[in-house]
Length: 111
Image (cartoon, rainbow, N blue to C red; front, top):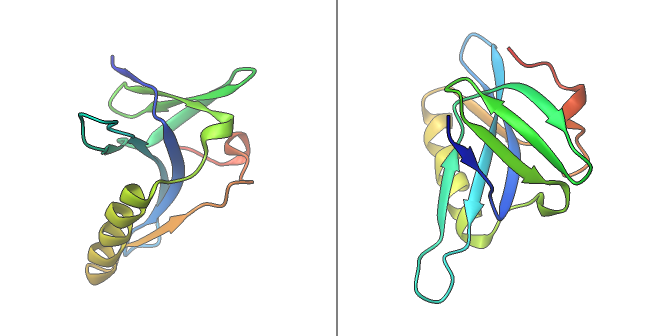
């Protein structure tokens, strides 16, 4: 089991051609002076636990994303990556929606 703690994160809703949806965490990290920015899209949220200052998103692959509540959002690099991902998915009839910052992850249905 891997645990990730992103610098920024956003929930996305992915809807396939059969109108079936699931949620994923789009996570990004700042590279800093000597590194480069990076990102990950989790395997699909199956469960969410809430701590005082963070959410724990459990993925279908067994990974856990510890996302701080105040870090919801996306960097310029992350927006570029996600925008390209959305455009490519649309060509295949798949819709990816970025959920707004005031979305309560505890109220969503996960499979």
